[in-house]
Image 1: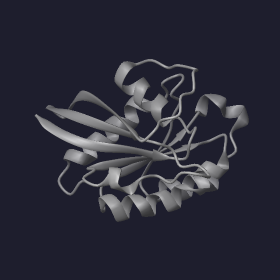
Image 2: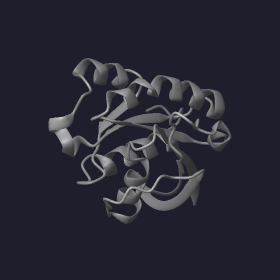
Image 3: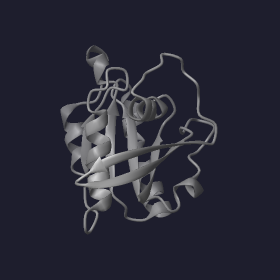
Image 4: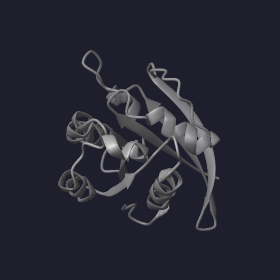
Length: 168
């Protein structure tokens, strides 16, 4: 069986853990527990006739006191960058996090999740900002709470991980 390491990277509170829980366990919890270090989950997915084990590394979020540990990104086959659509400042930091991801993991397939689309009335990210993110690779509007876009995002990245050349 093919196994692929995928890292979840973003600022604290963007919903990285909730996206993983929604994808792996098909559930959502309103309880907020900050990830310390890294939490690892696995899920086997069937894509294009192949069973792929995704080893999901949910990295502690970046905040004013703590940086993302680049050593966790080493050996990653793919990266999901997560921003909170209701907090534009989290999206502003994705460029710097992408640089860290490229330095640590190399030029691997990646996608961006703009999470919390269920809170559309509180959305602060403009269409122009979304277009700029989309130009960097796959962009998905997701909701860990409702499940919108979550499965599609993970499957899209998985296809890129097994495709010749691995492009998103």
